[in-house]
Length: 171
Image (tube, rainbow, N blue to C red; front, side, top):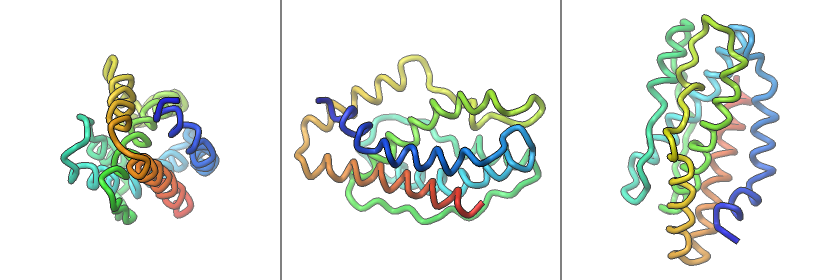
């Protein structure tokens, strides 16, 4: 079984938990949408900062500026991010999997945002082939590592999902 498939299956409950937390936000109302973005802003910048410190990750594109711009357009400040400090380098790979996967969900959620509200963050989709390349790179990299690396990557993904859940609980 590929590592990506293992990762997807092992974090399915974590993903569902985060979806349940964010499912309560009314994206079709400005206040609900603002709260949704504020929750994301408590998580994403911390994760992206941790990823930026890593030298062994494949290319990825930050979305923090898009999130900040959407919040600014809604007259909402960027909140202080929650702490997120992965230990092992492999944990960053797991976190990258989570935040890049969230682009897919963001595209679906963007359809719920009424016209006239800013949606640059949610509409920031993958470039053609970008998601597939990331998954292939993750599989290839994981295949050259040991079980400890794979366990750490899984722990990083779970920690990232938990961060998003904590952020949603605050908003």
